[in-house]
Length: 119
Image 1 (cartoon, rainbow, N blue to C red):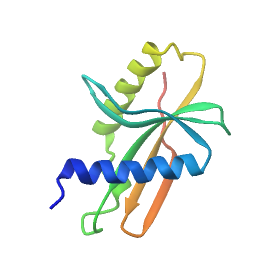
Image 2: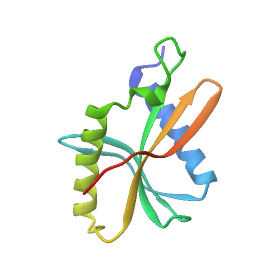
Image 3: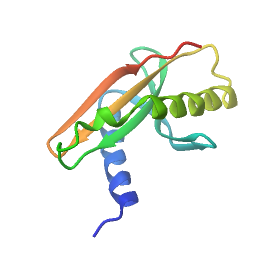
């Protein structure tokens, strides 16, 4: 039986493959701060911006879609973690956005600009 961590790593690997196939450059994976973790940080060459990606997987849809689990509380933790990354890497002059990659057993959905932040 796979652990929750192993399952998460598997689907994050799928998300990385998806992003690379769409022309993204992966900058970092599993960036940790005191506020939480950002699954993937990538550069979108088309938009020339840094993308903070949350990967969500659901085996079934009994309790809703994977993307629906990124609630206001989780968004705030992602924003605070992203601000740490931006400051640490001196990226204040670049554009950035927050995406969600929502995975079910038969679909990968990439939601760009999944939520907005005003800084």
